[in-house]
Structure formats: C-alpha cells, structure tokens
Length: 318
Image (cartoon, rainbow, N blue to C red):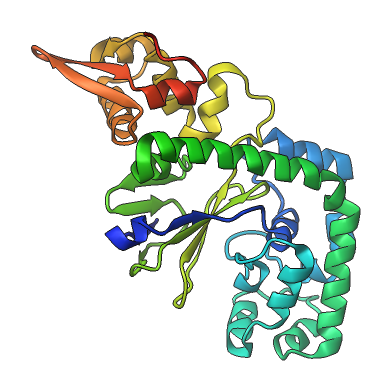
C-alpha cells in the first residue's frame, strides 16, 4: 500500500493531464494482462485485434518494459502527451536518473547490451529506441488511438462533473477501486509499503487505457503523478454495472440499490451482504458526497444525494 499524504495546498493543486500519455500507453500495452481479475474488454479486444506478436512488433521498446511491477519513470513524461515530444523528453532524462531506472529492470539472459548504451546516452541506442517506438505505435496503437482518446475524454468529463458536484473529496473517493480516500491520506493499493508526502506540490492525475491498476511517480521538484485506469474501458458494461470499474462492484451495487432509500439492515438484505459491509460501503459513499445519512430512532436511513443520482445517470426525484 502506498499512502499519499495531502496537505491543504496539495488539495488546491490537483490537476488532470490533458490527454493519455502516448509513450506510457505504448509501454503498458506490452504487458500481459493478469490471468485473474482482468475485466477490461476494451484491452482484450485490442489484443485480439493484433493477434499476438507484441514483442516482435515493439523491438527495442520491449527490452525496457518489465512484465509487471515497476515501469521505468523515463517512459512516462506527464507534462506532454504527443509521442514525439515524449520520446524527446525521455532522451534528455538526466543520466543518473536514467541509469537508476534501467538498473531496476530485472536483467534477462538475452537482454541486449544496447540497453546499457541507452543508459549512457549513446546516440545510436537512442536512435534505435526512437525508431522502434514510433514503428510500434504506428503499426499497433495508431488505429486504436482515437478510441483511447475518446475514452479518456469521457473519463475526464465524468471526473470533472464529480469534482464540480462533490468537491475534491468526492473526486478522490471515486477515483479507482484500488484507491481509498481517508482525509488527508489517499491509500493506493500497490505492492510494498510506502508513505509519500506531497509537500504542497500537488497531484497530477493521468488516465490510462492499458494500466490494470494505479501507478505512482514521485517527482521531488514537481507534483506527484498518479496514473489510474480510466473509466469506460469496459465497454460491455451496461446499466448499474457501468460503475463497477469505477467504484468496485459491491459499492456500485450499494449506490444503485439506494435509488430506494434504505436503512443499513434493509440494504444488507437487498444485496445479500453483511450489515458491517453495508455500513462500510455507505460510509465511503457518504464521505464522497454520494449518499446522505439521517438517524431514525435506533436506525439510520441512507438516501442518494444529487451527485449520487448524477453518477448513476438518473434525475434526482423532485
């Protein structure tokens, strides 16, 4: 778990990247989807469309993308999104940072020596890398890129509406099922245990089509970067299931069930979950501004707020 500690100054400096990051998406697209828990048909459809052979298509790019875990920071240039600009900035990564990045990649027996040349900034190695990245993007991602950008635009619109109606608390609480907002700390579910102080430099949110979960990039001189799976990649979702990838299936079910106000016990019965679980989910939704709770004697009644109705795509009852 990574815990991002946000100050009041950080909460005033939460920003969204204007578009998906082309170099990062190219790198993430090379990773094999996890065998379990992968419910993003948009990515599966892309894999079927290409019909395998990703490593051969990617050439030099595949040599610097590990199968899982750490993704070298130089492959994410969050201040630009155009592929050529991303690669050019990556090429000018300070030598010590680039070497540290590449040292974290687990060496494979057949790893080419050119990777070390890349770390040393040799022009020939960078020319090969640049050429292979562009060839891979043009052959494999370019036909899919309009859909990626369209999905990112829809995600941005949803996040903006959430921010407008519920504030930064609602935005952070609904960012991803892999994230949990407990003010002033954003808990991000990744391997390992880390605490990161944002120190008033803010948080830059970067949507990703191909990332199966969140990734964090700490920049000591600028805002911390949080890459998150964009909403809407699961294009098969309909009705109440559309919120599953955003909130988590059970929590989305709780929100949908509250189209009819319910006590905690009623809600638990409707969804066949424990009262403790129902209480936990309504607390998270209430903190996000999606649910209102009022006491009725010994019980509490949960109802949807206008933001909750909006997120479900329904009109709030008069």
